[in-house]
Image (tube, rainbow, N blue to C red; front, side):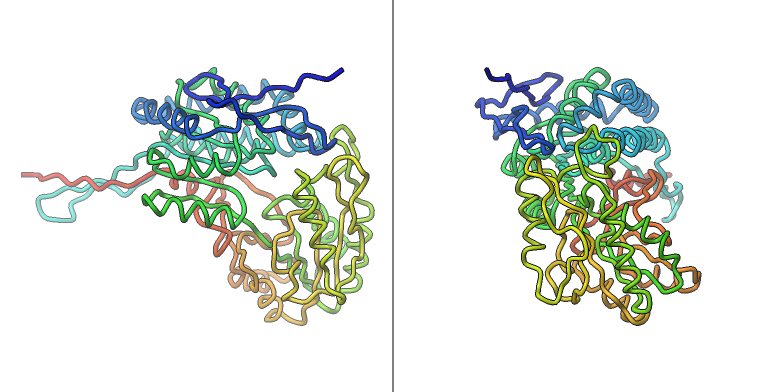
Length: 478
C-alpha cells in the first residue's frame, strides 16, 4: 500500500496551477530522506504566464498609496501569526529544522520584518524640492522599479521569502518568486495566505529547478532580479541580467571570521560562538564558522570549543533538546563530508567529522584545528556544522587572516578593549561586524556584503530603497 504524495502547485495570477507540461520534482524531507510531495518543474510557459500576470498587475499596484500597501502588508503579518503552526509545520517538513526553534527564532522575526516594511512604505525619503537653476524647480521622485524576479534559497525558505517580497511589495513592485527546488512547501503556503489579501498577479510563485530560475532571470519582463544563493549562482544571474541591463540584487555566500583576543571571557565566547556556528546546521552565510584566536589562549579555546561541540545535539524536528536538524539535501551532505574527507594531513578533527545515523542527512557538530590560511576549508564556504580554528599572534595577522578570503559578508570581534574593537571594526572588510556577539539581526539594520558575497542590502531602509528607482523632475517657473 502506498501513501499518496502531496501535490504542490505554482501560484500564478491568483490561481494554483500545475506546470503547463505536467512535469514535477520529488520533494524530500531531509529528516527522513523520504519523498513526501511533488512540486511543479516549471518551464518557459509557466514563467511567461507568471511574468504576464505580474506585469498586468503592476500599474494598479504601483498606483496604490503607501498607506494602502502598508495596510495590505500588516494584514499579511497578522495572517502569518494566525497560520503560524501551519507555516512552522510546512517549514520543518521542508527543512528538518527543530519545531521549537522555528517557532521561537524564525516566525517572530519574519512577522516583525513584514511589519517593518509596512511602515517603511510610508517613509520614503528624498531630497527637498529646490531651485538649482534660475527659474527652475527640481524635485526627486522615488518610484517602484516594476516586476521583480526573485529566487530564494533552501536554508531559510520562509524568512528569505519575506526578505524578498516584503520590501518589493512595500515599494509598489509586483513579484514572481521562485523557492528552491528542495524547499517549496512553505512558499506555496505563503502564496495561499497572501492570495487572500493581495490583488491577483501582485504576488506569484513559480516552483522549479535552476533552469526555471534561469528562465525567470532571462525573461524580458522583470526590471530587477534578486537572488540569495551561492557565488556561482550569483555570477550566473549577474551575467544573464547584464544582457538586457536588469538591475541585480545579490546576497551570496559568506566565510565569517570570528576574531577572539586574549582578554576575552573564553567560556562565554565559546558558548555564543558554538551556537552561532552550529545553529541551522551551519547552513547560514553569516555563521560563525572561521574562528581566529590569539595564540596565548588557542589551546584552551580549542579544548572548550570541542567540548561544546560534543555537547551539542542534532536530531529530529520534534526533539526539544536539539540545536539543529539535518543538512538540507543529499548533495549538501556530500559537500560537507567532502571537506572533511579532503582535510590536509596537518589538520586535526577535534570533534565530530562524521555523519549521524543512516536516516536523513544529519552531520555531527565538528571542530577542526591545525589549519593554514590557504587550506580549502578555510578559504571556501562549507555551509555545514563545521567550525575551523586558527591561531594568530597580533592584530595585524588577525586582520590579514580575517580579510584573506573572497567572501565579505559578516564578521565578529571578541575583546574587552573598546579601542581595539573600534580599530578592528574599521579594518574588517565585511558588510557586518559584531562585537562580543555573533549573528543577531534586526529589521532596522542592513544586511549585505562586499566582494564575492554580493551587493545590495536586505532589511532596513537601505534594503527598501534597493527596490526603488530615482527620477528627476524639473519644471519651469516662467
